Image (cartoon, rainbow, N blue to C red; front, side, top):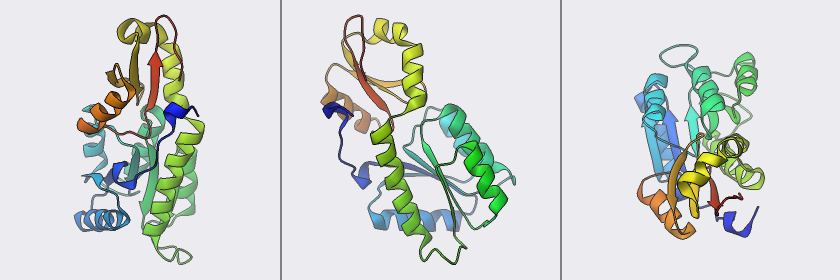
Length: 210
């Protein structure tokens, strides 16, 4: 990780999407996360609503999803969508303590699976908080392979459009660009964009580096 990519993890800057079809549960999840210091939280009450948000170019560092919602496979659909299209880390937080669902979630690409009913877990929200921080730290340490690959495959187009600029790439698309890196981060925050999961790179004339 270069010096330019180093960034302090401020919990209040992590952008989170909570997905649950039970409004009371959704509000409880949000209240707990805010107790830990998370502030940039949005909510969806179905997998369909969440998918529409993704289609409307909403971007998130972390997605926290229930397993069973409008359909019994709703949680799986979000995990699969995350694995195929998104850069977000997807964490399952559910009352459905099912080993087969847990295994399938990991196979589809979930970052973590936290059953609220597990008697070995004293506080599932403490586990959720730890998992969020670990996901952010992992991304900072190892990078975002999907978007880095997309950059490599599309570098000619990026160089043509953003030569000499700093660019933020997430969900396999350029989401913001500026001449200065600090200005880019400011723009991202002003526009409500995530700042941890995107790949930030500078594209000099005719070449690039991450």
